[in-house]
Length: 201
Ligand code: MG
Image: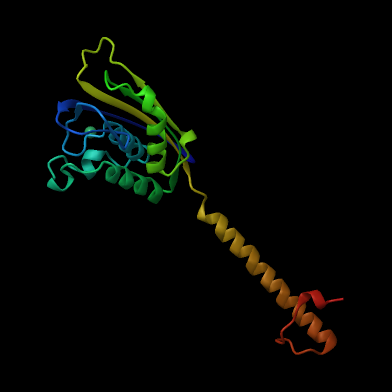
């Protein structure tokens, strides 16, 4: 199969006195997202979407919440591992689309900056990243941030194409050898002497 789709979701509660980080951006806000890591709800959802797209498990199977190594960890580490997983499975990212659900802060004014930061972390163009945000109307979730993410992957070019090119180059080399032998028979030039095929006139 040449394309794969992945979906991820995450949620974190807001907590006073914690720095707020969403999409790899530090955001000036009185509260941050509580979590074992830096609580970056958007990067966690994208990480799960990437892992899910290649059936590689989820963020918790790679980075157990109880592991002290990941205390306050930068979530870009999780994202990098997911990118390595999809690349070793033979895929690359086509595009990513996301929706944040939270009451505050307003994402609209910083969505472009967030899009560029997420694109940078994923190693793709900002035009291939969607950042959308909604308020949790009717969800009774005013003190929570949720993130949804979908990714589309495509297979990286097959190594078989390289093998075909090598075979073509090899057959050209064999053809040159045959021509060299024939010309040497006609002109009495030693068969293994250096020879430029452009001299055949
Ligand atoms: Mg999380």
